[in-house]
Image 1 (cartoon, rainbow, N blue to C red):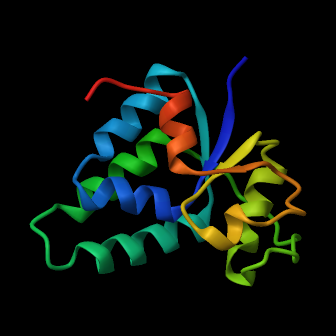
Image 2 (tube, one colour):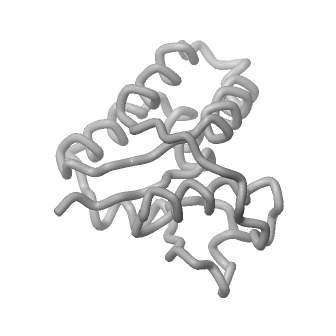
Length: 134
């Protein structure tokens, strides 16, 4: 059975800053993970990755394309309203509407969300559960 995940922008940025997005893509491929993305997450990734990497010599278009190719696009309805950070409600919409088992993030406010309807884990958890060679 495939594991269904939502990966937050903070995780994509962590890989992108070090130009290691291929490691995330390798983990998704190696473990046959279903990683979902929606329009809001794409827009957030595009904005934040470009801003985070504007002074680095990294091809942001290639990074964004790698993310889009490794993930499964879903249209979602805006329903969830209880995120501790309201701008992240879309992550819960995506996770709930795709029946994802976990949201992976680096955002402390989300990691501390006790009433989350979906388990939330950090990047360390992801790397421990889905290791790939360096």
